[in-house]
Image (cartoon, rainbow, N blue to C red; front, side, top):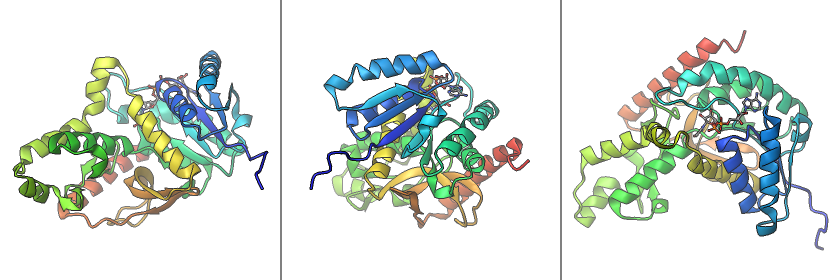
Length: 320
Ligand SMILES: NC(=O)c1ccc[n+]([C@@H]2O[C@H](COP(=O)([O-])OP(=O)(O)OC[C@H]3O[C@@H](n4cnc5c(N)ncnc54)[C@H](O)[C@@H]3O)[C@@H](O)[C@H]2O)c1
């Protein structure tokens, strides 16, 4: 029998600046949610975005969109947090930490109080530190607190590799792990096209494996945000698409492997920090973090990345 009153699928977005509003727009176009609630400390901004998005509905999918408050987070399957100060030219993501952690102290307890059963998806930078902060402040189980992490860096990496090797980026399987930021690590040892390692792919296609070109691709990946911010002041389309991909995996219970940030325990000796690794994401959030067979250099890089993040977390004194 057809259910004429299916349960609404609500997604809440806290912080509807560049990233939050672009994500809400992408979500509306996708038709995945039936309700989108927008929250921002700048209430007029949330109202304006809700009006603009509502005028998009006749071209898209029946969807209820409104500017709400924290009580409206109740029942949301996912609450995306993109609130906070953005990275300024020359500023590292870690510079932002104290400013945005203070904002999270206002937001996260409110969301968790009104929506103890939902999933928190963090986009605000520094995303790994704030994912850990959100986990601590929310009291939610760790599998329901996810950061967008290196989903964006991984997309940038795959795109650049695809340009170099002349194949669709979706056919390039490669991950960036660790911090979403300067200490991130490319997993060269497992990067492949059709199951072939990159140097083997080159050997078969007579393209010659160029180590310097690979290094340059990684530097372009790692530093992409700086280059885009220099030119247009902010980045938002690709991260919004990455957030959409995570939300789709959750709402459709897809068990998709995505490079996202979550609490890591006992991984090559790393524990008690949020960072990105290929992770199975489903209706419950983090279903499992995949154990990769990394090279010794990659293990060392991952450990250093964890150290960078832990040093920042220590400055926040979250336990106190
Ligand atoms: N994770 C990623 O890959 C990624 C990529 C790009 C940007 N970002 C980060 O996303 C964040 C947002 O970037 P943006 O360009 O959208 O910034 P923005 O300035 O355009 O938007 C931020 C919004 O947050 C709101 N806000 C601030 N304090 C708030 C509070 N206490 N409660 C509710 N809303 C509040 C502001 O009013 C503003 O509308 C930044 O931290 C940025 O660095 C992350």
